[in-house]
Amino acid sequence: MKTTLVLLVGAVLPLTVGCAGRYTILSVPAVSMTTPSLPEGTKLQPAGRVQSQYCVGDDPVASQDTNVGLIDEAVAKAQQQSGAQYLSDVTISEDASCVYVDAMAMK
Image (cartoon, rainbow, N blue to C red; front, side, top):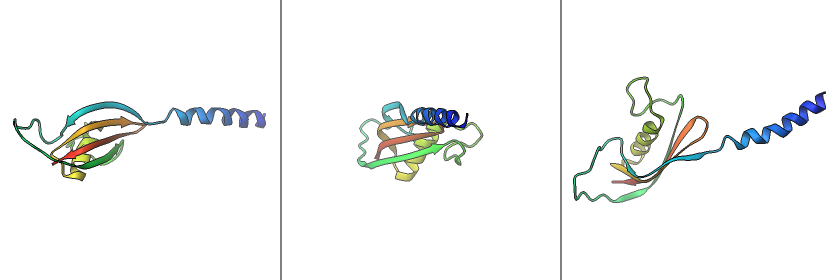
């Protein structure tokens, strides 16, 4: 009985680990939590790649109440870390409990 249980757990465990990977949920050309739109003719310069993550239970960066948007928080955190006015070439991905942002910071 113990051998059967060990074999069953050994067979199922790799399957559950494979399901917990990160996957892309959104790709957009530009996003900002601080600037709703840029005036026509505004020229910003790339300031390097920025990556951030926001996980369930982290302290919010942008939200002022209990209604926390995980993508909003991850984007706001990336902007805060980089000092960017907005982010370009944005890929947002997630795993079981975190949202990740990978983007170009624009200043």
